[in-house]
Image (cartoon, one colour):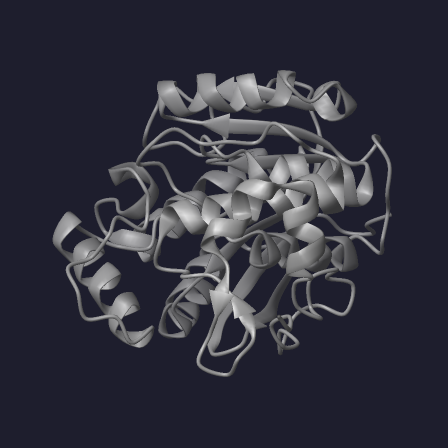
Length: 297
């Protein structure tokens, strides 16, 4: 069977932008075989609405591309698409002028049980990560995933965030410095809005049956005030750590939030703000980045 077509809009360095070699993936991860079928165009594909299929694809990609054979997530937790997650990292590498190696320190705010950004970031660029997570079960699982991969475990430290209203306080220690912070914030403002988002996602995929769980715990999918309120809190809190981080960044799913977030940023007076567009086919997102430093290295 043929592979899926080129992933339009992906970062030029994204190793998955030319699609997937399903025979090669099945060769390293035979469990994927049962999920691969021809799509409407005759190309090999999976049902992306089925979290078990997405997890099997992720496991195969992590084995083949990165040599990470033990990745898994607990039932019901968010199963992230590997290509889109790696795109964020490639844009961050551009932001810091392609600096690589363990001296580059990155804080992932809300790493989740999947811990995917730190795992990919170590493999792609050799960076060092602090993976912060507020959910105790997700934190323990992420720590287990890191320790099960000795090739990356010395570059990733998992930390439990004890306050659900803080991003940096309680995680960034006195005298500690980071080159980057990153975050994939909860998009929705309520459980009902998250459920409607799942149904809309299924409709966009042409699926009419009752929804399977796309994956995700409540704190992964929604928070009071949604994405806009979460990022606003992050912006105000970042000012308290202005001297300890070179670039603060976050994903912003809704373009209509950008003007309000830029207005919030003006209240904390960063020295520079950037917006970086991201895309994967019809799905569009963007990275909002800001810094308080002048004369950056």
